[in-house]
Length: 117
Image (cartoon, rainbow, N blue to C red; front, side):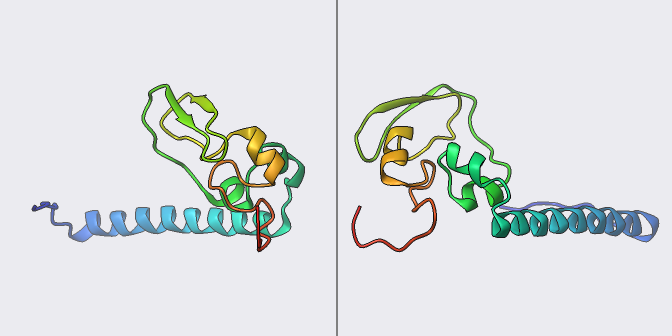
């Protein structure tokens, strides 16, 4: 596979560098802000209401998913759940609540090390 890229020089190169610098700095500051929020757990009540771990709530970021109604089975109880896209959760909300797990990634909701479920 070959990807051809247009050669940049002079003003065009300078503008491209300035543009990329602006966006990377902006995204870096956004990630730092998200990491601070995760560390402080500033939306803890809302996060727990949604049954998500800190990573999935604060740090996951934008997700590209297919625009298709998708059904999936819970990996614990096998209950079928319907989603509005191909971005699905691993377990149902009921299992997430009863086992204190993140419904999206299946981690412990508070990152506690477990010996059993």
